[in-house]
Image (cartoon, rainbow, N blue to C red; front, side, top):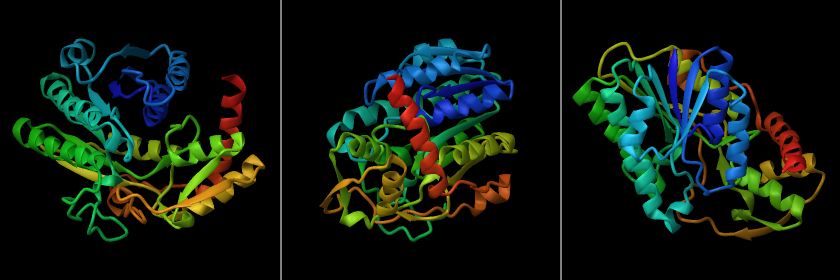
Length: 321
């Protein structure tokens, strides 16, 4: 089976590519290796993927459609994970989100509709699409027409573009709304990683509302299991478009995340309290019944189990960089 993975140098992309390669799949990875966070971390992930003979990598921007079609037109399954991430960064750099998340997603859809061997397009959406008015736990049937950030608006727009392409061109697609993914080889811009860096450096960390915000923290191995599950259970009819939540189905206080980091790192955090930014929800929690019914998806890793695994990797990473 031939796969195209966009965002292969990214956090989730690296883990999904590794899992597929371990199963013997042929994987073509693309990524622009931008400087949103450390390119060194992205290249370290790519170096590990390069150890697999069935992995081929192309450094390019998915919004450059001509180049994308040159390297990936024979894919049987596309796993589209490339995006400009980050809720608050979308306030600072809005045009980066238009280029990567809107033009980039459109470029992948155009690739998919012209790919002669394509069977299934799986793409990353986000829990951020659940904006104002959504009830907990978030269910896929919720209205998602009141985004609270530009990032959320672009991910919802991606879903709508996919619906249109499914209708117009018969593309079989699955969108996955990821909930706060964490774990080894993670993203330094995410809270758990940034907190670890600050605690080790003796810098203060900022907690909103004294750490009372809650998130559905989902360990990366569980995310990979969910992605592989939808790949193994593709849509059965042309033009079928599905969206699933993929989370841990459990909300945890951010202050508890900090306590786990302190325990594993052996250092106390210097905490600065601040009001919640308008773009941040108070709480997230995924209803995962639909994904579980289709694939048997059942997250196995609690935050108390996952944070020690992240910290063990983090110490290894710090030792070699």
